[in-house]
Figure 1: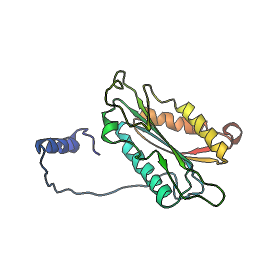
Figure 2 (figure 1 turned 180 degrees about the vertical axis):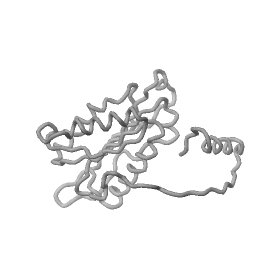
Figure 3 (figure 1 turned 30 degrees about the horizontal axis):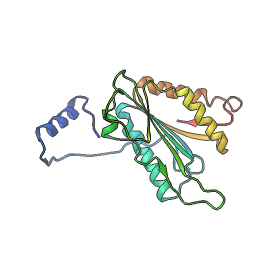
Length: 205
């Protein structure tokens, strides 16, 4: 998915619009991806709880991480206790065009001593008044809220969930507007400040 933000992306959208209903062949030069995740998700024993926070088109990054984890849990038996996606949008058209994380529950093979499903929560926060009033509802497994996400509350809930499962690390990924990402960083610091105050749980961003 590519959002038109001017320059080459705007020209790409115009090219698609000018093509009408027919198909066009276009030569492209593609490179990347660049960099790597700051959190080592390859450490499957360390990270069994994951929080994905995104705003607008930033969902593309979180979708990539989330779907990779879904695949590992479903096809490779990765022990993933929970994954929570928080997506803040101005309107719901983007959510309908690219619905987040296709399956709400991933079945996985039972372990010798304990078997359970992977819990996945998909939460959409429509931040522009009136845009959530629509006759075209979202899929039933998406929770729709009409306010900005309360990250402090979300972090406290994730922390308690990890404590209940006997886990001490939560992987956090974010992509979106600077204000949202600044709040995300602040919450990671505030809820991982010391063992005494965070209950032994650390949010790794």
